[in-house]
Length: 213
Length: 140
Image (cartoon, rainbow over all chains, first blue to last red; front, side, top):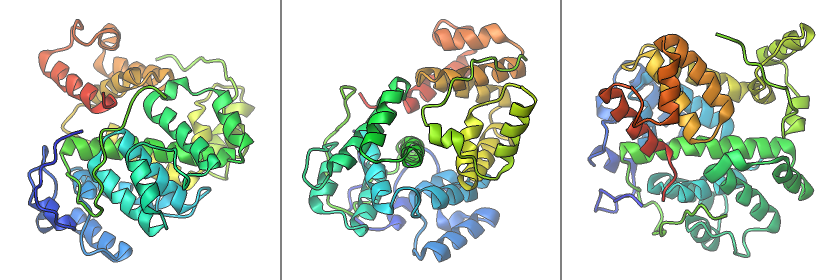
């Protein structure tokens, strides 16, 4: 687990602009031109007072910013083949496996708004799937998500068949794979730039990942 | 540069392969099939969800081809090296081929994939790829 750089439990993204990151990010008060417009569009569209830290990482390469917002909107922040709740379960679990405190806190919070219980949030944050609030069907999908995260090159047609057998359609498996891979990306960007958890939730997970599935 | 010559095995996700939505990717697939040509099976994934694919294609174009502080050749080398760390033969071979073309040195590219430390890559680029390795690998 990487070290946390902030000491104050401030609950909003404004704190991000004051912490020292490993790499420079584009603060809201320093944004110009297309980045400033993207930030304004984001605040309006998502009804949030602050731009999340992860977008400030992407804003270092301005064309990337709009594209990331568009990609996340079309893949993650919508009802797709998978319901929002399952998408956020995947996002939370993958962020725990990749030891990304920033994304973990952020997406566990989204999962809570989708009706996720304390038990579910705590379990996923600790990489634990053995709780009553995770159904057998969800367990099967999240085990697959773990395999995609840790050793995608070992995925076989049998893995897909086992998911089909418990009624996950192939299009749902495809979407779960896209979201898992999206968080491989987000987690590495947040950790490498050095975004600390915003502590929206009082989660303090231990380091969870292991290559043993 | 030779085109990809792989046996076109069915994908694991048959329903994805069988259900392309109207899009430029479906057109590409149909054209390739009707002319008997090889094609990249990743087009099936793009045709499965054209809206997300559109953003993804724009994103990868920005990353890989737009002006940046890193040369296009070095970016392709990063893609090939990361793909080798992730055991993804498809992406590794595709980006190794492009990196070889852009850098004009195929043996350099494969020496990096084989062993970064003993490769003939310049010290500065080697340091960057060591960082790439750290960003890529899963937590211990």
